[in-house]
Length: 356
Image 1 (cartoon, helix red, strand yellow):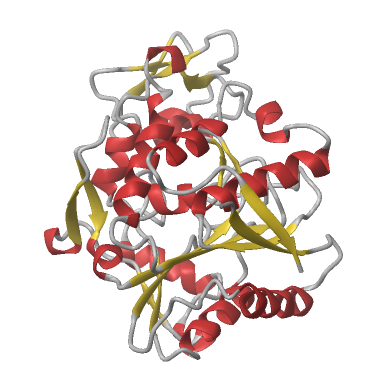
Image 2 (cartoon, one colour):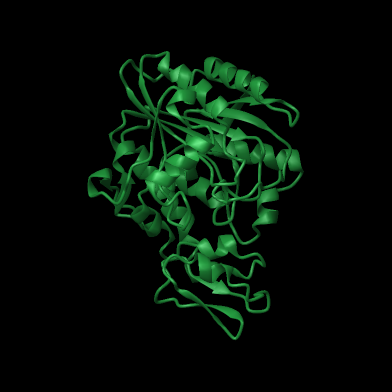
């Protein structure tokens, strides 16, 4: 039987109150939150957006979803983890400050906002999964101990995985910094000297000082490099990329194995909301107002993380008349995360789209 994916369309011209009303209708009509029981501890997995970013899911929409969960008598928290790359979201104190600046506070949303400090061992949980790449996943304990999880994801492009939705929000987003490093560790950034302008942005951004300028060109010391991909994100001339033929293609599969770890024991206690609006080339980790690359599609809901990401991708391709993510990230195979997630039993590639 196909998984159901519910869609409520959104137009580029819809304002915030209109979209918030649509979130309420979607939560009520789809019944994807029906699994929530009284006194359940529900972790609502969010991405609060990097400083200067505007693509993240608006707090007004998140509040509607949280209210729907609270109405069932559950205990709800908005939760996120710290980043691997350098910036204000690297540590919990500054990360919480950015979340508040973007409107994610208990006063506004009505629930606690949690970003565990994973420099403390007690906040990390080892989850045994014994998969192809990852044997033991390093996750934020908060997500492991929650009775249920609801992923609220901005569906958009991504420089490492082609696109990101529910699967990436969980796999990369619930990992500790050590877990994030596990997922990136085989990535081998290379410098294409003909494109390098010697600006030094990558050198300044590298968290382990693995990059230097030699003859006015960036040079990456592979012995120091931790594969965090920060240099790729900051390079203004697209002179640094992953040598995918040298092993970088494993990264999406590692991410999915982490999603498998997050979902362990929660397959019947989870729901997913994808916001396919203000669809951008890159993810919300970039500190800029990324422009739209696709018309707004709408908001999707499902109990199947594979189906909701597949439906989101199909709808964007249909709206653009082409695979815009493949066009923008030609060396990334975004579909691999979907097929591998299906192989691991996380969900179905076949779905029934129900438009509200």
